[in-house]
Length: 593
Image (cartoon, rainbow, N blue to C red; front, side, top):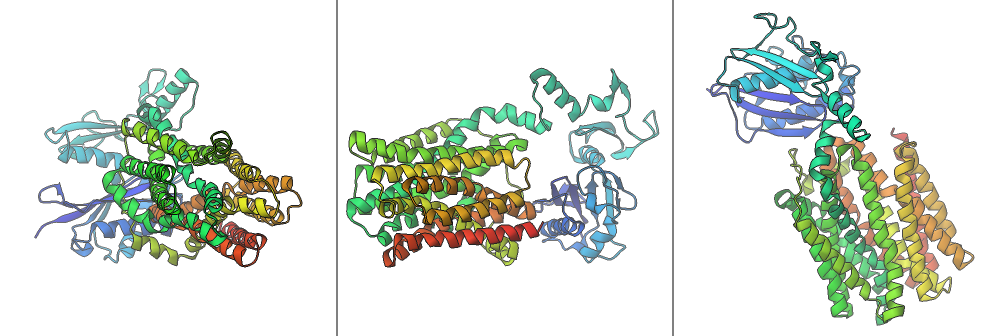
């Protein structure tokens, strides 16, 4: 009978497990699993994530049949007795004082005599190299690790030793005098950060950020350009106004254009993520950009209601792919410590395209007599973006944890908090797309503005969004995201209500700007708070959030139908109801802190 044991590596942000055949000293194929862990979560949440990873790795060999479990564990830790003493290390501090051996035995339903052993993670690295790595043919080795500190392990006959043969009593070298201080000050992250600051005057958080800056700094711009292409989805408002006028459509029929674009977020977001695992983020992003280009060129060259609907359908499919692929690809090419900042800036880039489009459309209509030149303009930019991305090298991160599936996504809706937050995404996108698609008609009919002025009023909404995302990135440094979300939702509700009762065209345009300003950060705040609460389910949450973007397909037709039955003013009250829900969910989130 084979002797099989489980090796488990505990990191500050993950757990990795794999079975090993002790007779051959080789890993068992297809049993390696890496799962993200929030090291600042509660004791039970951390331990439950560890247990889930262990059960994944032991599907083919049941736990009781194993020879034991070995943990590579960071310190401070009592390795002999299995006691956690994490304190002052910014990770696993809620495990302080817990007997991890007993906790694992209980949670895994194992007898207390079942072997569960612990060894320092740096020492485990050394033992692994001695048994299976480059040092396997040597009897005596010294393994050095450079991280937050300078780690050392002495190996003799494949086992750690200390206090013999001239080896320091504790087996460590970090405290040995070196140059003007001790070795730990030179062979560690601290030295790299200090040396980088002395040479550049800039501060970085870690060596990983330094490596990322060197490898991917040159590719940030072409990835950011894809967010400008993403703004093509906001052409739905321009399309609704002009196509409605050109073909004499009613409100209900014209609001099929947003439906053609945003329905695909519900249908394709998760399948796109699954296909992306096989083709890669950059390749999927280029597919989305090229589909967007085709969707833009089609109604420009062949203009009919049918080609408009087909074109916006292709634009919607392409934009869904871009939304799924662009965000994680951007995270791959920027320093990890600046990921949130760049994600906010990417929305700023998108807002630039959204804001410029109405002005460009008016210019093309007045100067050349053809508003459809806006399609040609965005189509050419899309082709340039796809070409630039194709000819650059990008180092994409590999996803090791369990992949999201449609089933795993939908199961998460059983968690009340997640379901409410996903519905929040549905309604904020409904407001965003709805204001874009219907505000022009509101300004034309109720405020009696000219078509050109009404179109420029939409630009003020996008200018508010652009300014809001920029200010949000600054203000969130000082305010908690929960409080900022509540304030944003309350302000959005107030601005929406007052907009309906605008006394003058100037007031209506000002309030459109304020709606864009106040609502601009709600989407990223809901996304961030949900992933923060369930960090190990980020894949599934991302899938659900992108599916909820389909609110942009549902809300505008409802507004259009009510407008046809009653009045354009009555249709605007749908946005008030959406904003009321956002205020409710923001207060709910605030109470869940």
